[in-house]
Figure (tube, rainbow, N blue to C red):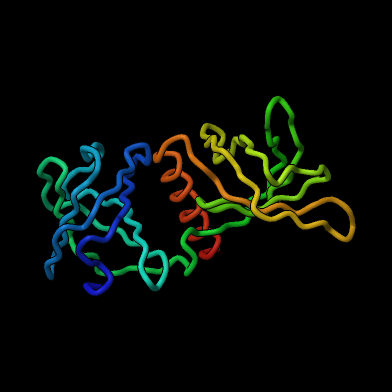
Length: 196
């Protein structure tokens, strides 16, 4: 595990209340702990309360649970976890995501059916011709009470043999919290699906 947790690596932490998600940089690594300097005050993190951690390595997205041993302002000493897992090799975890949604641009609304999403972007089907140069707004439902709104930029449009189009593209976020929320949502859903 020590070779996977390296100094200067970026890491995201999600406490039990995901609204307090935070990210920072690993500034010290010892056999029994590592220290992270966070971008924001670590609200919602408490000593000995487990949080979820995500970091990008050359092997893929590393995921593990651990807890703070010591909190000094934005610097938090984290216990080295006993277990970890790689979610997948691509930068963001991609999951199946089937919804009928509206893609909006300049007061024009396009009916789409999403196929899959990740924190990086999504793929969907539509019967309408989408402007590949356009910038769109999309609201993604994550639960009955929670949505994430972001901008969508098409990258690839394929015409389907049986009519309509399949569109792939990337997300741009209004704030980093929305990106972290979607990252956590996809990672959790991926684990739930795998454990079914």
